Image (cartoon, rainbow, N blue to C red; front, side, top):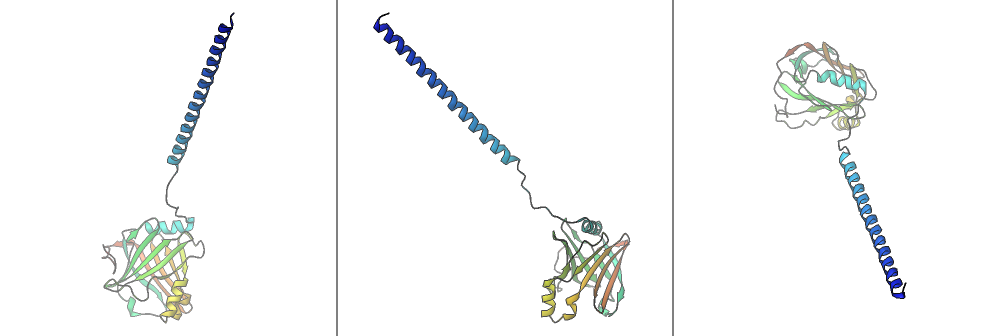
Length: 229
């Protein structure tokens, strides 16, 4: 073999090696791109599968049962009567009606009508730490009374049929400001049984209780003051 032919053979081998190296690099780059694209796709899939939702409304079984028992009467109205009042007031001599008017998973709105006076609405709300009872008091024009949104919050589990609401701090501050010192120790209670719903207020020297007959629904009244039908 001549020197020229050896040189040509070496050149051919070098070109072949360079071609193989180039091919290997191309494959590696292509695989790298495939892996990267696959990784991006996996990330997108993971992002699309994530659940987006509001924080859960948490509660405990006794309060869930109590809430559900009242909610079962949503849209219905019932007549009641004062069964205990150790400081009788003519303000409650009129016809007494409760109306389970608006309901959702977190709140119940229950107007309490006293004759033609539609100033009172009880508002029961699940808070995640228990249940809250508020009294929304309005004037006939819908404006808020100076003494309004008072109430209390549960401090314990209560029972399926009974919940107690000791006066909260907002209410204490408002009562003190409005000269209602006697109300600083208020405890409100609500009972719900198959045939009766009870609203009760107790404090030292004071007890007021109204029972509503759940066996005899009546025609619901118009919206309370400050609300719309």
